[in-house]
Amino acid sequence: MSIRLILRFINMIDNKNMDNEYLKKFAQHLKKIRKEKNIKQDDFLDVNGISRSTIAMVETAKTDITLSKLKIIADVLGVNLKELVDFD
Image (cartoon, rainbow, N blue to C red; front, side, top):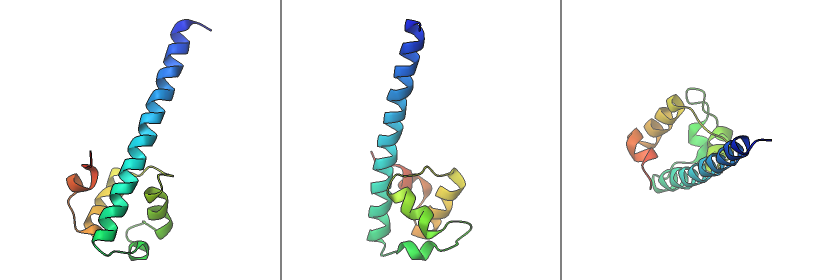
């Protein structure tokens, strides 16, 4: 195995770890906003294809989510998309 290939693999792992950290931070932020707005996960039931389990998985950083679903979540929470994703 070449050194270049090893370095690319290490970089992929680092990027994956960064992605996981971002998902965890986003999950915490989403849950915080939802609770502040007194919205339950059940309030998302089948809203344009978003189920309670989808919200639960996003809030526990077990899955990623599409931009269109992020927009729906923002609308249900009564926040703009920027507020939902700007948490650093």
